Image (tube, rainbow, N blue to C red; front, side, top):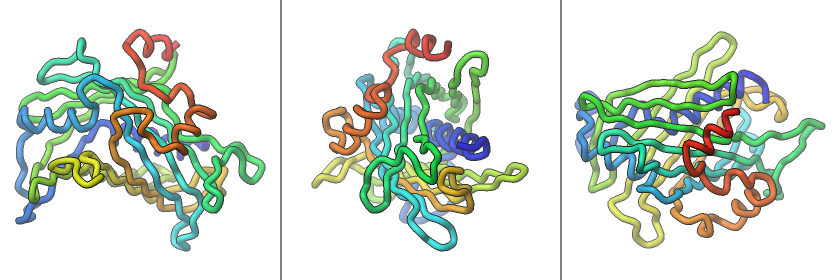
Amino acid sequence: MNSKVQFSHLVKIIIASLGLLAFSVAATYNPAQATPITPQLFKQFVDMRIGTGEPIYWYCIGEVYEYPSGKLVAKVEGIDTARLIKSESTDTKKLQLSRKIFFYRDPVTNQLLREINGMKVEPIAYPYQQITYELRDAQMINSVVQGKAPRIQKIEGGGKMIARELNGLVMFSAPLFLNFPGYQAFENYDFLIQPSATRGVPRYQLTWNRRGDLPKFFGGGDSVFQLASYRIDKYQDLPKTMREALESDGRLWMTPPADLAEIAALQK
């Protein structure tokens, strides 16, 4: 994967994890009406994002399209698995340990893509991320640690949350505009909290859309990338295709990091 695409994916995954900008939708839509992050909103977000201690899995499916032709380039299937570390958390500060992997699949056969055009197809993969969420002065302050020595990175950020509600549905959104020399992209994330899980509809959902460069192994050029995701609380409840991909090509990603000791080992 070329350096521009790597950087875009880095920012993308960080922002998705941190939720730097968030809002929800109301019957009377007023984007200027901001609501401070209360302890209740903070708890609602972290309970959704991380869970309460046991491993959780955000299962994702989607597609990559050429732009503007709309040609389907590949399907995507992946997970973001995370756990709350209770021993390092308080009511106003939560520690999340997670890892993520997203596989490209053939748009016709749905088989895992390992090589195309004579080039190795690399999944989007992060062996670990150590993320802290902190409630401070009615804002959620976030930081993420990732990488290996000697290039361990700590990225800090924060943002005001605008909270609205429609018939019990809450939506946390994070739009992201990337504008760097030689590279531009737009991405948007929507975390949805349903009032409850009913009739097979999961309570926690996420959609993500991105317009930016294709990876080099797909030939480069402009593209649109979209994912739909929902939270699953047990590994065995993941779809069979996801479990088979993990067990053949991504066994490390079957569970989130166990503790900070495992993170330290991965950093070496």
